[in-house]
Image (cartoon, rainbow, N blue to C red; front, side, top):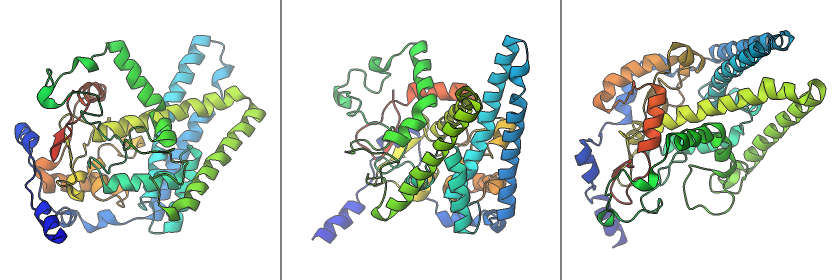
Amino acid sequence: MAQKNSSEAAQTPLVLDEAIAKGWEVPEFTIKEIRDAIPAHCFRRDTFRSFTFVLHDFFFIGLLAYGASWIDTLSSTPLRYLLWSAYWVAQGVVGTGLWVIGHECGHQAFSPSKAINDGAGMVLHSLLLVPYYSWKFSHSKHHKATGHLTRDMVFVPKTRSERGLPPRDEDPEHDGPHTAFDESPIAMLLGIFKMLSFGWIYYLLVDVTGQPGKTGWVSHFNPNCYIFEKDQYSEVMQSTAGILAVISGLVYAGQVYGSMAVVKYYVIPYFFVNGWLVLITYLQHTDPTLPHYSAKAWNFQRGAALTIDRSYGFILNHFHHHISDTHVAHHFFSTMPHYHGEEATEHIKKALGKHYHYDPTPIPQALINSWSQCRFVEDDGDVRFFKN
């Protein structure tokens, strides 16, 4: 009888009221169809080639740091402020590229060798104060449940009830916009600043934007929380040890070169890296035109297609290793090296057709749109769009 009930539940029609209202078609393609559309060489990993990108990033990091070493010898105070600001911005851009390479190691896309992937990833991510294995494990779960309302790991939308709003049929403001969410331009900018400056740190420490309702200390530094399996305990502790080793190195550098030197050369660029990471990730998966799926409607390929490619311009795309303008391809095939992403994306566009999503909206406007319009989703329905 239980088996029969399960079968009947599986055959229950999807509740598609919002999808119909939005003209959204739930796709039916398979992963094999998408993979077959991409040339086989796009999936090949080349360790030597991957390391050239690491050298590329370290070259520019070193070049920028060397150039910055001359800034304080200048007599003009305004010029010093200007040049330090330029250094922080530029170093944040290049550091984000290094972060992307470390992230690629976690996906085993850097090399055919697991040992090289994990060794390089541990070093690169630790240098950026990212707990390598902890992030690798949680990020893997994100990829396995992208767009899933109850299993995705980051930027999980709050429901109507979680926002404290009345049921839809009792809500005088219906689908919104809701006056409860009204905010001044200054409040909006402060909220965005807080997210970009501290959102990544909060996510690592207390799982902000993760799944709601979890008890205890949910953190990338707590091997006993729901994020991790029991057999991942030692790797989580190794990740924490890597962070502590780098922090110890920074403290030592502060004693040798002075605390302000560490702040200017490392700490401020570190926050810029975090800002890019949050901005890129937020806009890849948070948009008023894209829904989230219930467990009944979701499958891997449908979730992977709930990703938006965006271009940040030639320079940023280059130094960020095309993490933004080829992210749809990355979500379908995360072990594919980034240097094949552009070619693969051209084939994926054709294979997905109208289910491929690219948004040319200027990044600042896209950020404001998502921030102001993506406030909550309904408590029911199998395809749920953001509302405000």
